[in-house]
Amino acid sequence: MTDRLTFGRGLMLCAAWTIIAFLILPLLVVVPVSFTDTYYLGMPQESLSLQHYRNFFENPRWLSSIGQSMLIAAGATFGAVVLGTLCAIGCWRISSGMSDFVRLIMLAPIIVPQIVQALAFYRVWIDLGLLDTYLGVIIAHTMIGIPYVVITVSAALANFDLRLEQAARNLGATMVQTIWLVILPRIMAGIASGAIFVFILSFDEIVTVLFITSRRIYTLPKMIWDGIQEHLDPTIAVVAVLFTLVVALIVLADQLLKSRTGRVGRR
Image 1 (cartoon, rainbow, N blue to C red):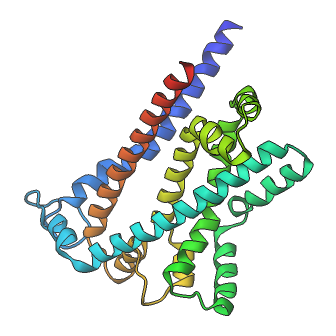
Image 2 (cartoon, rainbow, N blue to C red; image 1 turned 120 degrees about the vertical axis):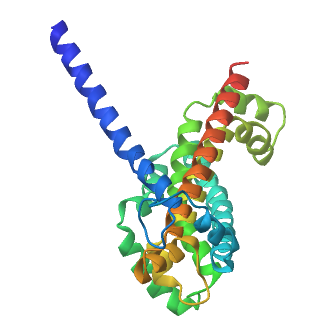
């Protein structure tokens, strides 16, 4: 029995490390490629070079694409966090069969294939005149990101002490005051996690953007896509390295926030 448990544990550890290696090892290739001294994607031939980093920070098209992606991601994050948090709190507060149905509908964007969503957005956005507009992309990314906020906030609400809400109501607080002063501070870690998920998802989303944008909007993923289609520009490797660093810092900040919130909650 002991040998069987040891074998199963070793197998699980092997699978876990294999998955970690699958995710991390590509960075060992991307990082040196970003310092290549050639004008195509490849390893450095004679020496390390910063020319492609210089090209990235001096090229107005790349900088403009970053600005557009940041603007769209910020707008989508704000909309998804507000709507997703209210939906999660409402479903948690009602706690009935209807709330489960609403929560299932909110999770639909995760279930439906992204290409199907993109086609649906394209068809509807034609009638609404939202093609190739910032508002159209922000609304689309907001709808795609709501499920992630609902999931993280619902998980945070599962650990919420109902006695705190009851105490607030007994002391004369209105429902709005109870949500704002009692519930939201206690689930802030879940809200922050959902916001991070939505921001990264919107910043990195490409399928929907290709369908509902044309010449006016060029997000960073769209620039990368065009770079791959035209020629294999090593600047793409630079973008990959910088984006990985930014995501790592954001995830680290999220973990620190969760740890701090957990300590405050235990107090």
